[in-house]
Image (tube, rainbow, N blue to C red; front, side, top):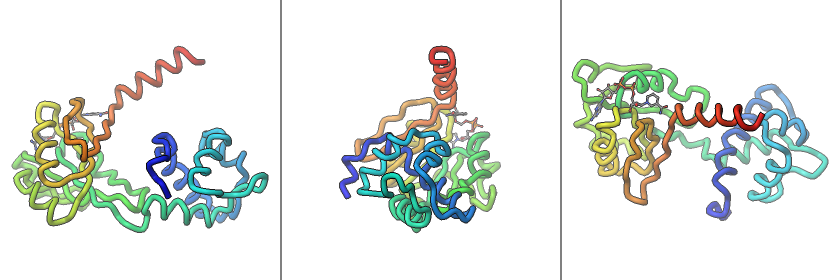
Length: 209
Ligand SMILES: NC(=O)c1ccc[n+]([C@@H]2O[C@H](COP(=O)([O-])OP(=O)(O)OC[C@H]3O[C@@H](n4cnc5c(N)ncnc54)[C@H](O)[C@@H]3O)[C@@H](O)[C@H]2O)c1
């Protein structure tokens, strides 16, 4: 399968399809029509067909999709059998919320360890995740073979921590800080900005209703 030919927008929708087929399986549904699927995931059926076409022929025209094989397909594609261990740096308000959430709805992502520099919280656990001193960052990430980190430190420390993460061998950073961090091209950074999302939503409401 030539993954590099698949558009980013399609890749971003894969977890959505996976989650919905899991939901159907949990509800004992065996089959779903393409119209029902389109309505449920709120993606039009032409886009769904195009998305699926990148992976060969999934489902038959006019027949819909069989839940079990589709779920197995997305599980494999998204590597659901392997749990990705994630590190989190910066256990403040946002870090706390993410640790308490800890992706409990997805069984293949888990924050395994958190780091902070505040001596008052180092050594504690949140939702069973240990909070370690940032001094231990490189050693722990290497020992636990962690590839992905969530960055929830204040903007003024974000680049410094990102550099430490890169140095430790991290391959992907989910950056919540407002700073656009610089990393080598081999490290992928995804920025999460709730204010941006809200502004975009409001813009759409104002202009396209
Ligand atoms: N993307 C979003 O939508 C969004 C939403 C809210 C907050 N934020 C951003 O997330 C970040 C965290 O916000 P918050 O409200 O949780 O802040 P906070 O001040 O409550 O927490 C920051 C934590 O980072 C720790 N820290 C600081 N420097 C560190 C370092 N060098 N190594 C390890 N730990 C360090 C602090 O000790 C503290 O525990 C900020 O950059 C904020 O702007 C983003």
